[in-house]
Amino acid sequence: QVQLVESGGGLVQAGGSLRLSCAASGRAFSSYPMGWFRQAPGKEREFVAEILATGSAYYADSVKGRFTISRDNAKNAMYLQMNSLKPEDTAVYYCAATSSTWSSGYWGQGTQVTVSS
Image 1: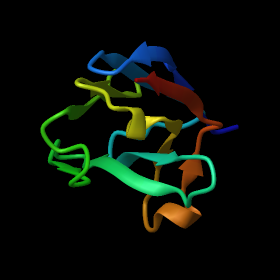
Image 2: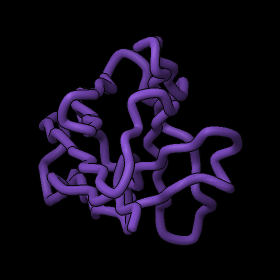
Image 3: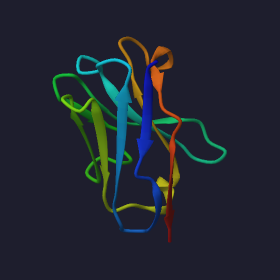
Image 4: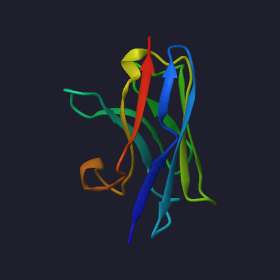
C-alpha cells in the first residue's frame, strides 16, 4: 500500500521557521516529481513547490526566497524548509507524488501549519 505521511507542522510565530517532512512507503518515488501544496481555511488547495527527479525545483511566487524544497531518494523522503513564515502561510500542507498529473497522483493526509502574528 502506497502511503505519504507528512510531519513537522505546528504553531510558530511570524518570522519563525518550520521544516516539514514527507515520508513515502509502498513504492520508490525517486523517479517521480514530488511536491508540496497547501490549503487555507475557505480557500482552494494551491501549489507551493515542486522538485523533479533531477533535483530541479520550482516555487510559487508567494514562497520564493523563503521556502526550500529538497528530497532524499535514499530515504524515499521529501522536505520543505520554511523560513520567515507569515500569518498568510497558515494552512494544511500536503505532500504529493505523481508520474503524470497531480490530481491522479499520491497524496498525504496533510499537516497543519499555523503562523501567529
